[in-house]
Image 1 (cartoon, rainbow, N blue to C red):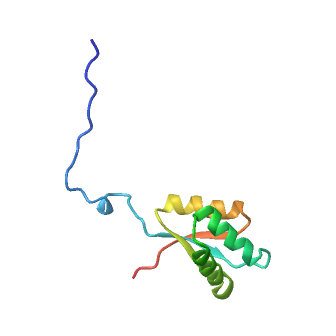
Image 2 (cartoon, rainbow, N blue to C red; image 1 turned 60 degrees about the vertical axis):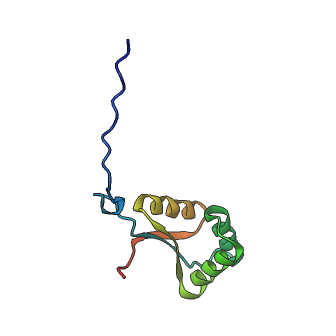
Image 3 (spheres, rainbow, N blue to C red; image 1 turned 30 degrees about the vertical axis):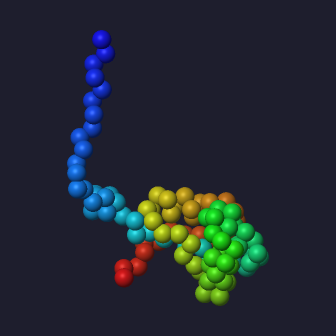
Length: 101
């Protein structure tokens, strides 16, 4: 006879935003460069992030005119994955702590 599987303890009423180590306040920032065409940047934002044509174009214009644009916000590990993906596409991207409001 097989012993019953142990079940994890469940804690009711825990807010994950207050959990230790949970810090969703990170951003992936794409920076302007003299190499990539604006149409290519739009293509990358649409392909990788799934942004609409309008949103991808808005973000690309931020990169082009302001020198950078925040393309994603969330947990640090995920933002680092996004930045690496942007590097793989040939774009310059960094991860930063989101400014406090």
